[in-house]
Image (tube, rainbow, N blue to C red; front, side, top):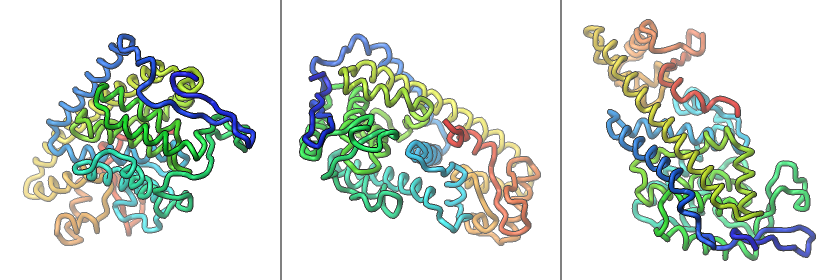
Length: 379
């Protein structure tokens, strides 16, 4: 048995993994992790400080939640982009494509979990609630949403069967024991929050307790745990961008835990991801502050019409895609006035008309959307 557990032969002819409880034995090498942990903590603290000075940090959080939802869903094979999601939310896409609905479910699951954490412990019950919302009405809805599996699953795109799979999680009879151990670890505050989050995420992926949606729930677990431990004041740390860029290394690091108990190498990789995404988010927050100030100055100089222009700008930070009808409702003005406001902002270079049509037009606040554009790139 390694520090992470052992592989056990099954009578059906395949080999499954039985995880050992956390924390690892022997303990994590704290000295080896001291520097990467301090760098990750520093980056996280700087991000937290920057977001506190944003004019409306909740809008920044909302865009990052959307970005994470898109990226995390793309890792699992969906094709929806951030623009697709924003267009759907702007009510410009009434067809409700399935990929976008999966991303919307991710946002609903995340928001539900964050709301529940205010009065409910981070627990197996909450994890099931998250999973149920994640899988509702989309691909995988027939694979026991909100219920831990009672049959064997396996991991690996090249594995047509369990004997060919890259990794076979614990057999069903061991799942609840492994999950019970994980729940106990989630309530253990003896380790620094980032180390606990890194260990818990890897263990969840190793158990793979659902028939579908494990990757998305496992990534959400990182955010929930850090918020639960008050390591971040806003839910702004999302690793999907980092993991998407380095997907194969991510899978290799997880497998190295199972085969050789190499927890420290995994945690170094995890902490590097935390440091990089926190620094990227902090830079984006700074760009948002500068962008808002520049554009508010430009709109304030427009004389009598500046009031509606400035109110429109605030709406665009909530969703950078807007139609005349949506703006009409938001500002409580006539449709003609909404059209004039959008035309004025387009002439000032703030908006781009995206449809090329005379009717049912849609405008994009491109300078703002571009700040999150890396979510649309392929890995």
